Image (cartoon, rainbow, N blue to C red):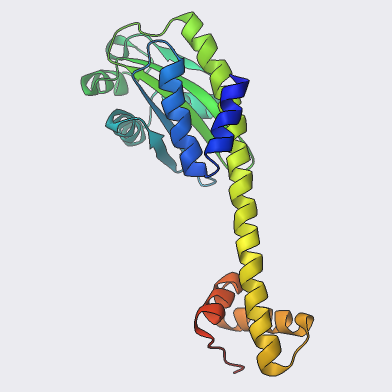
Length: 220
């Protein structure tokens, strides 16, 4: 499991690629699973299906958001694993269960994927068969989810670093243009960028991107 998580992180450095790799690996690694999906909740609590092996997880996630109940929501909110033997007869979600079963999600396993300051997520496995997931499958899935979370956090950190480096390069290009055009020092050029971004109410990065792409800049 740990080796698999490292492979996911190494081979799929983008966040979206890592999410998709986790769903594919989960179906192959947890007995009984025929579909898998990852749901993330942002800072404002908005739920979004970010990766899935097929259309079923997307449809089930949309149903949970519509109704406001379901195993994925419980896994997200209560930070625990939720196992569903037969959604059609499960009394925990009287409105969600029968409709989920009609969609083909009869058995489900939802794992808390990760929790940090800004977001939380859940990995959910699906099967059209009743009682598809055993206690052993739940144990394996829980270990897999914890290692997959490490890979996902690593991909997020790497993506953030790439964004920071890209922003630094853009700002450096913009500073160079201003230094050459107005005979400024590096610090003076940066302060000019900051002041101009404040005056125009746009981000420094966006202003630098515009300047680097078009060469247009006004001191007024």
